[in-house]
Length: 234
Image (cartoon, rainbow, N blue to C red; front, top):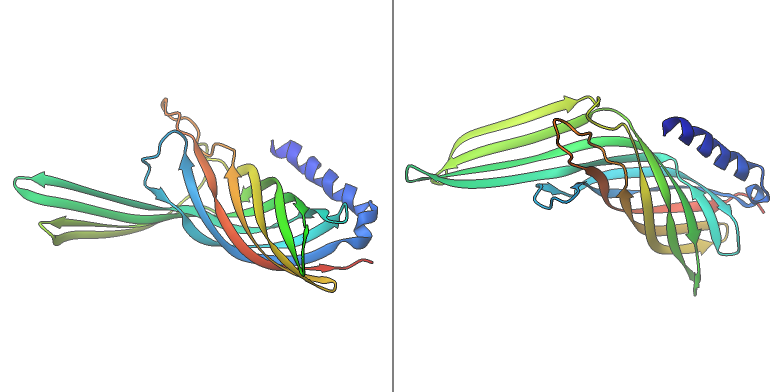
C-alpha cells in the first residue's frame, strides 16, 4: 500500500502542476481542533470517548470549474481517545469503587485530497468538501492514566501512569479513510476566509489479530477549523 501510494500522490501533484489551473491556484492555511476517537467495530461497550487535539495544514487549491476545485491539504493532526471506566462491588459488606481515567494520544502527518463545491449564498459562499485522506504516524503512542480506589466513599489508593509505546507488529503506522465536511466562506477580493466542520471515517483496521482476537480498531472522529485561502494567479 505504501509503495503504491507514493507514485499516486506524485502523479496527482504533477498533473495539477502541468495544467492551466496552476495559473489560478490558491494557497492558504487552516487550523482547528479534532474531536478524535478510536472506534471498535461491533463493540459499543469499549470505554472510548472523543479526545480534543490540534490540527493544521497548508492548502493548495486548484479550480476545475466556476464553483468547483480540488484541494490538497498536507498537515499535522493530533488524534487518540479518552478512556473512562468505573466499577462498583460489594465485598464483605463494604462498597468498593474503582475509577479510572486516561488518554491515548498519537500524532499524524495527514494529506486529505478533496473535491470542493462552493455555491454562492449572497455575499457568502457555501463550502462542501469530500474525498480520501491518508495519514502516517509521527512518533509513538502516549498513554496517561489515573486510577483511584474507594471503600465506603473513602479514598484508599491512588496511582498515576505516564507511558510511551512504540508501534510494532500489533499496530499500523499507515492509515487511510474518507473525509467529508461543510462550512461557509467569505470572499474579500482575492482572499477567502472560511470555517468548516468535518467528519473523518478511518477505513483501515489499526489492530492486527493476536491469539485469535479479531477485534477491529478504527481512527475516526470530527474536526472543526478556520482558515484563509489566497488566489495567486489571474
